[in-house]
Image 1 (cartoon, rainbow, N blue to C red):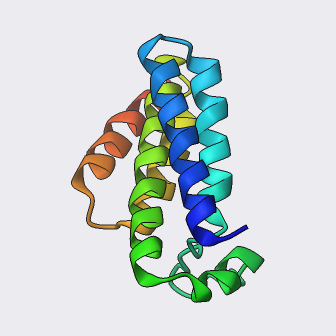
Image 2: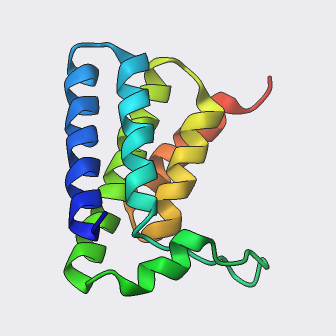
Length: 129
């Protein structure tokens, strides 16, 4: 399957997730978003963190062959899908999962202020009393 096909399917899954989210069917939205992530991760390499020793995955190695325009669109959409998934977990009050999704989005875009703010706000909700 080509990168273009992977991207097309991922965007379809994202749209399906958005429709489920609007219909307040959060479980189905999360399922669709997870499927979108699976397709997008085949094209977008996992960001390496400051020498944490994380080895490149097969997806990361194959991402080098992805044309720059497709890689940019896939990365943008991967960040958006993690944001959408965080919104789903917010509705279900699964704060640790919100934090995880925000962190994953920030891995791809460390300067994204909205995720950082959401992460700080959610961290206070997830902290044990």
